[in-house]
Length: 324
Image (cartoon, rainbow, N blue to C red):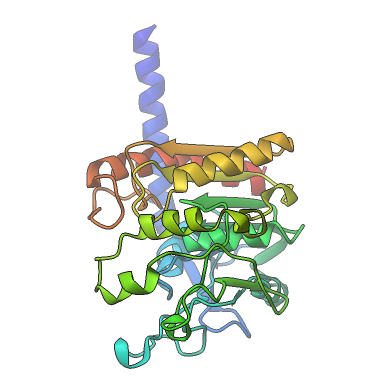
């Protein structure tokens, strides 16, 4: 019996290696999306319409998330779109804004720009906008869940290290007006949000000095009366949801948030999976090996183990949600 299992396991490994080798031979086309600054559609050369997956970056902003995961998802058979929606602009307090055509403050980021993106993709032969998924991480998960709760054409969501509430925004405008602006907006109206406690103080302390988990937790503790309005109405999203979170997350408590989201959606009978790694931190996207965890939480090893375990589940989830 055991020799048979070994032969089967070896056959699976050989097949996966062969598939990976073939994937590397696939030519990927990177095409700008008309009317959407710095958005890029990655797709297999010569292929017909493929399910769309929009990649939503976190607080780092820019194009790195799309540049990294766009080709990977395209080789898996998707029309992958990197959608940069934030490019930090701290004026005289920081370097020049890398992408001045998009928002320079994380304030009132337009959730409805996803609808603009979908319409722009209709004109691109590689994109099948009737199969539409989102893959977000951190603030990108906040974006993804907020959007999915409002648009019934979103068919699948992967939310890495999610939050269950919308949070306060930040930027030059809030340095002397802390607690006054939202991270996101929809159809011209800011979303109700949960304030921080001590964000500007942490910002002024210098890079890497702020205790972001405490800033979020303390803000939440200070404003229990805002919980109901700030909560993302995840029960309004009828499609499947996969969340990946870490119990040692130093950015915010993504494990508790994922647990709360799952409980809400389970009560509504909705397809929801929460994969929580108690010893892992915030850096859980992809399947890469150990890397620095000083600001993420967890250790390089526990985070790498979590990524290695979660990525095949993400791949399978996207396949059953968008292609099966």
